[in-house]
Image (cartoon, rainbow, N blue to C red; front, top):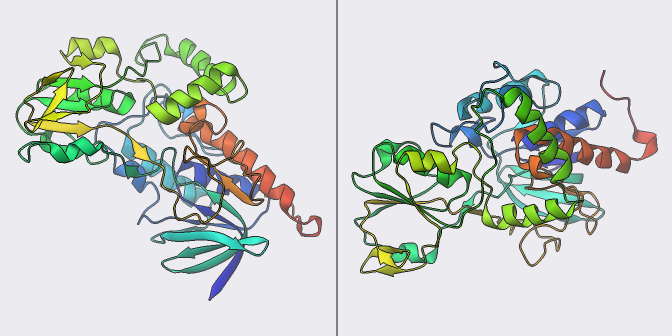
Length: 365
């Protein structure tokens, strides 16, 4: 049987939960669907040493401070537990182990087909992640010698997974840099890929209580889709990866990481060719990002680049359809926990505006 609800939010990460919080405050009915067994599982599946790039005092979602000392950097399990606690604290209607299979029009509203029934709704918020969750691996990976262990960054957890011998990390954005830095502690390591830049200063600096608020102001108010500098950075981040945030060039140099800015586009005699030379490596980690796969959304709302045609998460071509949690949905901070609340609040306001006036109910106290 079809179940009708005013708004369906797809994804119970920080963007989906923050949207739910704001809708709850506005008195609007909704449900959050997520395929994982627990809230926060996307974070639990990251590599063991992953930490946020912002101090705990800036990592809160609306209404609930992050439970850690303000100048510490939460680990991935800390974030996962916080998200689970957030959903429980506000009794958000999260339904787990439900995988959305298709989203399509249904009259003036939408039909969300899942592996556990169908929801008919007036609004849909797609909050499935910043860059998507389908790993992207270059075609040349198939030509590597079978003796070389290959891992995508989404499969990497700890250095113990790597084989003895040299490691090649392909992709030099923040995730690739973090993994290369960790691998280099015990193995010769090469980091290959275009330089995505870095955001100074060192996050462990004693002056971070002064510096980070300035960085946050830049990320929230200057690097936005409204400014030329922000639009340029949006294309860089969306299509080439984000800059180094925690690990810096000096850190890589200190651990002896060999840095090569050319791409790995050739395999010769089963070996990856790096900067024109075949390299004998034991492990290749593909930190080459993810592909946005929206083929389950049966609506003509995507541009040639595969990204939805939206403005601050609002899809003008499909009234009632929204996205939340996209990279540069509004600003650089949109892809960080610290930016989720503002973007979610904007989307929730647009949803509330669509509700018939006779159905408006008071916001939660």
